[in-house]
Each structure stands twice: as C-alpha cells, then as structure tokens.
Image 1: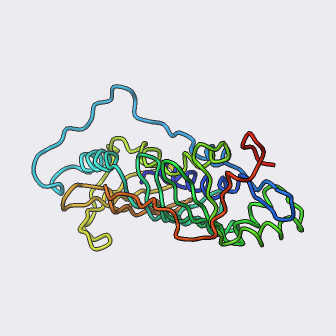
Image 2: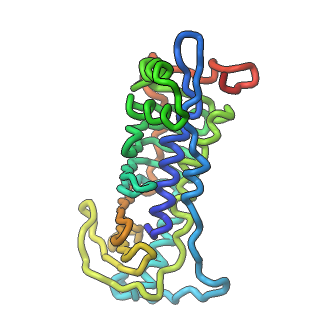
Image 3: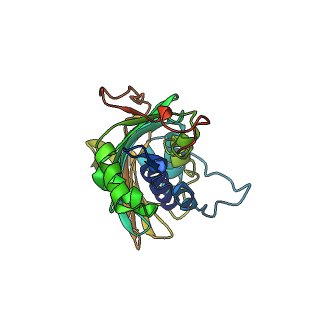
Length: 283
C-alpha cells in the first residue's frame, strides 16, 4: 500500500462510516438528518505526484521473484494486485488525527461486506450489493453522526434508541445512498498502484499470515514504506506498512474470492426507502 493508498483506504472507509448516516430516522413522527461528510472524506484522497508521462517501465527479468530488482518486484506486484477482481483488506490507518480500523471485503463491481471503526465515531457494519446497501451502527456511531449535525440531545437520544445496533437498508438507486456507492470500490483502493520506485530495495524474506513473502522498502512522503510481496503463486502485495510521521499498515488477502452480499438474516431491518417524501428525499 503506497502512502497515497493508505490515504485512499481511510477516505473510502470514512465515506462509508460517516456517509451512511446521511438520513437518520427518529421516532415520534419526526426525522432528523445525521452527519454526511463524504466530501471531506473524498478530499482526503488528494492525488500525489505520479511518474512523468512516457517514463519507461523497468524491464522484467526472468527467474525467481527474489532474483529481480526491488523496482521490478514492486512493479509486477502492483500490476498483479491491481488486476484482482476482489480482495479482503484489514487496515490500521490515521484519519484526520484519529485511529481508524478497516475490515472489508470489496470488489471492482462496488460490492463490499465488513466493518469500519473510527475513534469517536464507533463502529459501522456494511453490506453493499448492486441493489441494496445494508448498514448497522452502534450507539457510539449514531451519537457521533448526530454531533456532526449538532442534533439536539433529545432528538439524538431518540435516534440512538431507534437505530443503535439495528440494520438499516436503502436501495442503491435511492439518492440517500449516493455517499455509499463509492465507498466499496476496489479500483479506487488499488488504482494508485503504479510503478515501483527506482529507489526500492529488497529486504528480508518473511511470512505474512502464514504465506512466504519478500519485504521491499521504498521512500514515502511519510517516511519509509515496506511492501511485502508474495513469493509463491501470484506476486500479490500481502501487506504494506508506512513508518514515520503517519504510520499505518494494511493486509490484503482473499484475492478473487467473491464478496458475500447476502442480506442480513434479521427480521427487524428498517427499510429506509419507506421513510421520506414522495421524491425519496429525507423529511
């Protein structure tokens, strides 16, 4: 995970975590809107300088991966990882000075299944398919969402009582799901995997989640980045860590394994499409 990918992971997850509360339904005949800071999350994905147009790709040599240069290894690993149709990512990153934990399976079709935690915003579970978004926030999530909108305390308490730890669903076609549609896109997470740095340097062989891997270090804007590349099977990036001012790490697994988008087996799911005005807007 390049340093920019670490930012992208945090931004995508933050969009899911905070954007899911776009509309919060409160009992007693009223409805309040919880926080939606998708724009702020997406702004965190500031592009980093890329290689000059026309820069030649390093030539690949034959033979075992470990016999190639650090730049060659990373270039092939980035390309291989970028081609995966789906993956599972677990990450610990920094988002606006707060620790965030990501545990998501996602694919290039926009499907995902997993959970996101952000300090001060609680936990959000999410299942997104091509047709529906299901999400479930704990009490801390809904209170954090209410704070973002300066919701009065009484209304916040009503919202928490009605929605905490309860699955909510909304059709992907509903405008209120707009902030969620980009939060589960594997292409956005791996899209900045480009060419390996000319300064990349091979390190030691090790294992990542029981799989043999080779560490390759390269400089990043935050400090030093270490990518752990699989040495058996396809050369996927299995783990990426950044040390320095903004440390973080992500582990990648379950490449090309279909994402489970089955609806929650829960009879008390709140259907958000049945709440709101005739045009589908929040009331």
